[in-house]
Every structure is written in structure tokens, then in C-alpha cells.
Image (cartoon, rainbow, N blue to C red; front, side):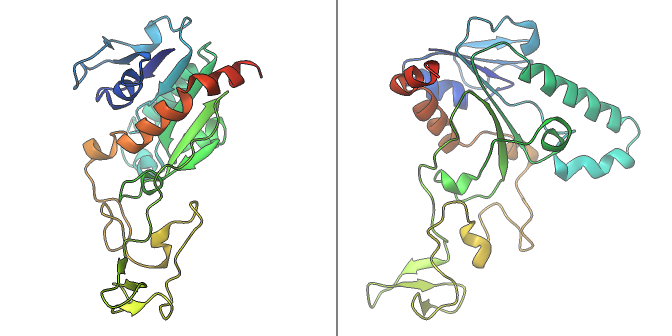
Length: 237
């Protein structure tokens, strides 16, 4: 399968597909950080018509909800937001059979269309929180691969129960923090915080770290969207 990963410099998603034997290539105006097939240049200037799947990570600087408040404070920033939205629209219009576009919660969902799925790192084995939207064309939603329990729970030394580190070691049967089985519910909604969160729940990671795709997401994309059996079924739709 031919896979193009647009606006990626890390090679994380590209390499996940390469490891599974797919013909994958990344594209960005910057050089790739990880040696591998890469096109350095404008991704919209490349012909993607022969590709089976595109996975796109357009820059979120001017369209993420977390930064929109700056549009009223910084002259010219609102115009850059419009340019960023126009770029997203052009990506979504690319004529390929299957396409996934990833971005944080922001203006794409209100100005273009609602997302098809919201994923979290903790659903894929990472102890971080970062609500991220996926816009999908002819692709199934990603299935969580490694949902983490609330890290406030630790195995008890004296019995088979779990103890809560938030409520002074109370046993699970006595603690007000329930063990959450629903993968769509944030385990930390009952207390505590993820590794990348401040006490108030804000993301304390740098922009460079926040912009990187989590390896758990990349592996899930390659495994679930790159499966030949699954693709046969999708083509028959």
C-alpha cells in the first residue's frame, strides 16, 4: 500500500507503516529528523493521486483553540488563521481514496466540519492527556490499544485489592475514586493528573513536544489502517 504522511518531520507515522512493509513516505517543508523516504517541500505541490492513504498533520499554531485568543491581541494573526484554514481545506480536497487528518481541538471542527473521532494518548499506552481530533475519509475510527488505568491506583501490599494514592492509601472498595472501565472516560477525571499536566490540568509540555505524534497512535494507525484484510473490505464498500 502507498502511504503519504503530510506535514511530518519526525518520521514516526511513516516509519510505523514502513515496518509493516508498506511503501510510505513523509513530506514537509523541513528535512526529516529520522532517515527515511521523505519529500522536502510543499506537500500540496506534490501529486498524491497514486496513493492509497494520506495521513495529514497540518500545523495547528493558528487554528488550535488554545491560541485563538491571540488573534485579538497580535496584528496580522487572524489573517494567518484564515490561511491555515484554507490550507486544511485544500488537504481535505485531495483526491485520494482514504485520508486521515489530525489536529488538536480547534477551528477545523467549527469552521470546516466536526471531527469523526477524538483520541487521547492514555488510550494508546502513554501517560499523557492531549485531546486530539481525527477527520476521516473511508477509514474506521482508531480502536484504543492500551487504555491506562488511573495511575493513582497501585497494587496493595497486604491483599489483592488496589490502593489509592490520592486518598491516603484507601482500598478500592472503600475509596470514592471508582475504577473506570469505559475507555472514553478520562481516568483522571476522579482525581490526580497526567505526566504532562500542571496542578490545574494545563499541558506543561513544550510546543515541540506537543506537536509530535505519539508512537502509540502511529502504531495503531499502521496496524489498523494498514491491514490488508481490512483494506479489502473497505474497498468493497
